[in-house]
Amino acid sequence: MQCSGLGALIAISQAGPRLHSRVEPSRIEVLREFCLVEREATMVRNIRMGRLAGFVALPLLIVGCNGSTPTAPNSSMAGATAADDVPLDPPPQTEPPVVSEPIESEKPESAEMDSALTPRMVDWAGVQTEVAKHAGKVVVLDVWSTACEPCMREFPYLVTLQADHPEDVVCIAFSVDYAGIKSKPPEFYLPRVTEFLASQKAERVIHLMSSVAADDLFIEMDLDSIPAIYVFDRDGKLSKRFDNRTPAEGEEGISYPKQVLPLVAELLGSR
Image 1 (cartoon, rainbow, N blue to C red):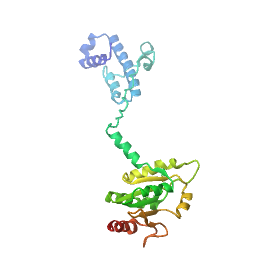
Image 2 (image 1 turned 180 degrees about the vertical axis):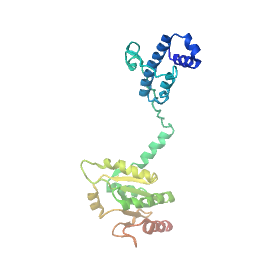
Image 3 (image 1 turned 90 degrees about the horizontal axis):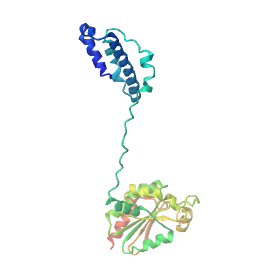
Image 4 (image 1 turned 120 degrees about the vertical axis):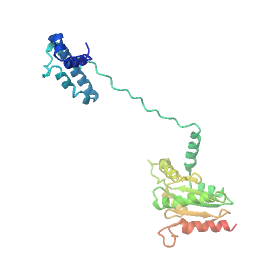
């Protein structure tokens, strides 16, 4: 007997005294007690599953069978705890999220982009060699660092300059992040440098990084501080160096719009 028997019990109650007289009282009592046991087991199971709300009205249905408060099941009918007798429903199984693989055609482009943004390690002699490769074009060399806020503020002008003059201008960004700390070699700074370059969409710019500690490099370059911007003419000769010794008029430091861009325009027009 299952507590579809509960439906039968309710039907007996609704049928009235005539049907009650045809059913032995002992069978009605057994049916009621069985339903009480099953109700208790179901409530335990659903409490554990978080579904108690639908069972609050169930005792009222049982009370309606004879209009009186149901008696508690005796020990012979419900001796063991319902939770021990009734197996719990297994928790719902959820499928692990499916991680989509990148499209194969996108992988080479991403790798190419990462390669374009990864600086090549050089010393000052290596920088000069790179500049000399581009004779016949105006070369703008920007000496910068992620620790230099004015450098990063002016950096977008370098990116735009290269985009505006892809055939006549070569822009080189020379990172001097390496501070000479033994536990932090030049490669230590690559992630932060590359992250900044990616944020600037600077794939068209040539990227170099100093393999020499900044203090030693500045002595070799006769440079007090950064930012510093070198502009070379088409013959590879240094036309002008902008640094803290040559601040822009009305500015605390150097300025691409006020200093660098006008000089580049002049050199391009003198061809």
